Amino acid sequence: GKRARPLPRCPEVSGHGALEQGEAVPAKGRKGGQKLNIFQYFRKKGINTLPSSFYGKIAEWESWYNGNVKRFTFYRVYTGRGCYSRCKRHSLGMAKKVCEDMADLLLNERVTIVLDDQRTDAFVRQILQDNHFDTLGNEYQERKACSGTVAYVPCIEDLQSGLLGEVTGGRIKINYVTAKNIFPVSWENGKIQEVIFAFPKTYCTKRYLHLQHHKVGGDGNYRIENTVLLVTAGSTCGQELTEEEWQEVPIFAGLPEEIETGSAEPQFVIDRLNMVNNADMEDEENPMGISLFANSIDILRKIDTEYDSYANEFGLGRKRIFVAPEMLTDENGNKVFDENDTVFYSLPEETLKDTNPIYEVNMELRTEQHSKALNDDLNYLSMKCGFGTERYKFEKGTVATATQVISENSDMYRSLCKHEIVLQSALEELIRIIIRLGIALGEPLREDVEVTINFDDSIIEDKEAERQRDRQDVSMGAMGVDEYRAKWFGETLEQARKNLPVQNNVME
Image (cartoon, rainbow, N blue to C red; front, side, top):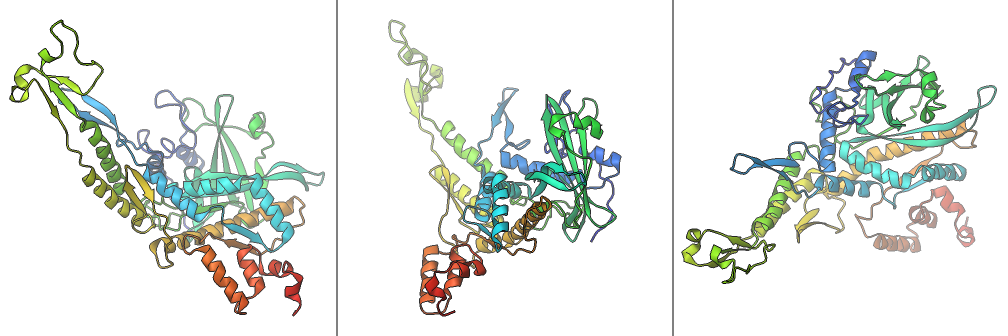
């Protein structure tokens, strides 16, 4: 339920707080750079949100996704001569791979969104197209799989109003926000009701942070409060600008201090993975999602360790030929071997094997053992991330993805259906908000339109085989032609009946 929360503690400078590795405003560097501690600002303003330790978890997930994990990707090896050698660990990049695959399965080009009103449908499609949702939608599904949560925040840009305050013009824009810049303020039963979004901006080498606070007013309607902070050296809270001051910055020109939406419905959409958040042990009611691989970090670490060993096996297992010093030159003192050839090593004569002046050493490569270990762990990772077993296979030095058709009883199918429940609700909310904003702009749209979202299930069953069966059902009268058209042409039942050829309506 909804409850009051204690003020969050400020993260330590050396920790993994949201403003060190997952900061809303990127820092210039650890020494002398400009840093903004957003949690300290919230504390100063008396705003309660999630603890900074959870945003440290988000930073950790993103580090695995980016392939740059602290105290793991780069490591030191003691050489035995009083010094250390700095090494970079080879990585299979499986954290990003599982996120890519989940995004491609959830939201791809085969997913269709249909509205039962033609004018409203065309308007929504145009807005989504203008905001590049066909590409950014999939991209942010991948980011959602990485960090657990993303948000879509539609708004009206370049708002124009008349003498009486009525809206006379503007365009609808969708802002996309990742988890590290989403700060819930109040929630109930896992649904975020009030939230602050952070939008980092840079203009003329100056760094700004735009905070957009969506809150419920006394009349029950939502209002949006805007704040702009200037990131200044020596201040961890930043300098809060007045509306007059930020209006002088071109990127914030026209941004009002407060917007009354006039609606009891939120003007933002939170999209998360349908998984219980067990990352924040301090709060069992954390409304944010967790990464797809949040509980598979140990497996990812083991996979990269094995792959690094596999890669080093070939470097350490090169053929070497050891030669005595007197074999390096001929009787005239000319070099016998190419000095750039790394296969030859000169050793003192007394260390040579059986007094042979030249002998070779062939290291045995343990490729089979490495491949088996990698395949075992890839199966564990696939199972933990909801793809079932045998999704990935390590062969010929690379990871191959299985493409076989899966059944409706498989782990992967059930996992997809579970995540599609939340995604369908998020897409419907986004469409409803776009429609309300369109109506505010004077567009003749239907707010009570029926929204139909058809997800891609081609991985479950051969679509051509299913379509052929439906044709047989139509021919024997077990399925209506309008039902067939609605299913395969991405139309509603009403649209399908209108689009049927004339001869199919004779009986009616």
